[in-house]
Image (cartoon, rainbow, N blue to C red):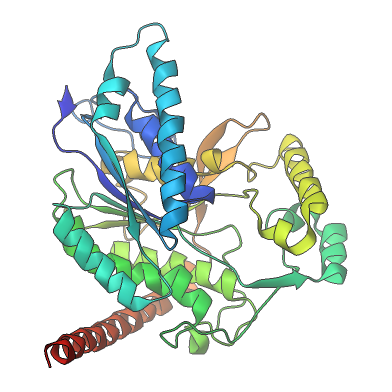
Length: 405
């Protein structure tokens, strides 16, 4: 029997890349009577007989595509719904079909909402609008992100390929990045888009996440294989100076999300989970080197996967497996791995050489050395969020007053 309460899921950056893959995968999994992504892996806690019941079947889904470009998001929504319609038609033709996919589709709504993480005003307005429009939020998928790449350092690229070829195609160090870019709020641009914008979004939706009737609300943070403490400088926590803002921002996600998840031991607390999509073919390299070398890059990705790399899902749908698994797996399965005395982990998208996707785990790098830094970052982000929120409220009041004059 399907649950009357339905997931209400916000996905940032949902109009392309891994965000779009997350939307596709959520529709496929939730329209299945037995979603494979909800099944625990060997490294997760085994459920008791009482807990090991069939995962709940939801009567429908409200999927909120939170994007900076509404026009691109609406186009992506139309493509997504058309794609899902084809999936349901295929499911109906399979032997043993029980009707769930069709019933689920009829009760599924995909909304587009404007959100620009680079502007704290739009984040606050988004949070207020969503909290009024929807009765609760069950999941917040913090997927959107960017990098300020300039070019490829070819000498460094050749050196890395010759000395560490697998790392060169998994976590390359030869992209040069802009430094000193600021957002309209005067904050580090990459930092605000990747880290603080999502932190502020979580805080603005915290009450809605706490109201979820499906159990503790979940915030799934998207990190990266390139997340590294090597370049992180605590004095440059907004990443205004560093020439490695992307790697540093992703590492901040690791320790901030882990700190938030461990801040409370209450069984009803909002859960924060770190995932990473592995290596995905995007248009970043295409913009830097052109379509020919981009095609060569994809060929190399498939080659190294065939040679044994587990970190190359390549396609966005496969790369979304970790994020969707962490959205659907029973939280009881994570009891051991989320214990405060257990070293924190990240959940990553992996594949075998044939491209069959699965979820793997890896440690949060240098956690013991940076555990206190995680707590300090949360304090700083909270203080900044409250400051900017008050400023925006004063600004809105002033605007309203001037309109009445």
